[in-house]
Image (cartoon, rainbow, N blue to C red; front, side, top):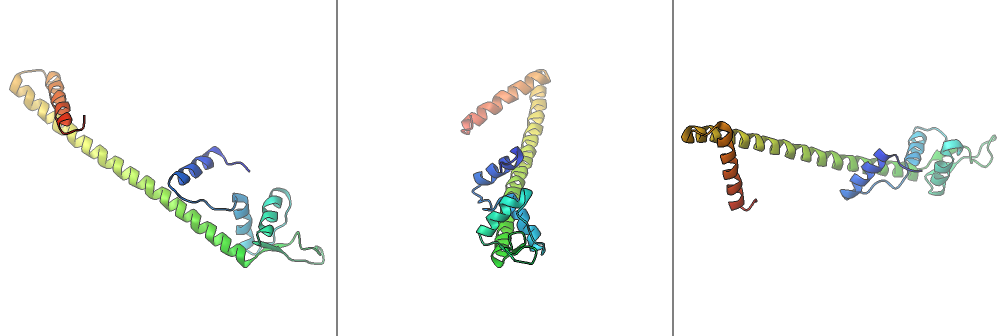
Amino acid sequence: MSLSREDQALLNAFEADGVVMPALTQDEIAVLMIAAEGEPMMPIGRWEKPVEALVSKGFLKGHPSAQDPTGRHNCYITDAGRQALQSEEAETDKALAATLNKFGARATAQKQMIDEVTKAAESLARAAVIAKAATDDSLNQAMKNCLNLLKQKLNEMGYG
């Protein structure tokens, strides 16, 4: 089963953050979620491969009946399947929390940066008005002179 571009991008972001993604496929997780509600699962159609994979992992077990003596079409979740589902849900929650925290921290940093740049722009505008009054230059020329001085000061501070 191939992932959509969006799912692959999210997976890549998780992996880049060092987050381990769940070992079960999305379809296997869906089957376990349905089975955890007490519903029997049958390996037919879309669910054939995930049900068979979960049976082989011991997460589902067939229960024979009069209509299905082999139990192949009457699969229920096992205790191991419940534990696997809980583990997958915990890993998914952990991965999502890590991503949300990362993006939250990034948004906070971006806001702080914008606030600081706004303060710097306001200071630069005030400096240009002072320079204009002191030199009789145009406000545009005073701003250019202040920007040149700012570049010089940044270079002196090691940021140039």
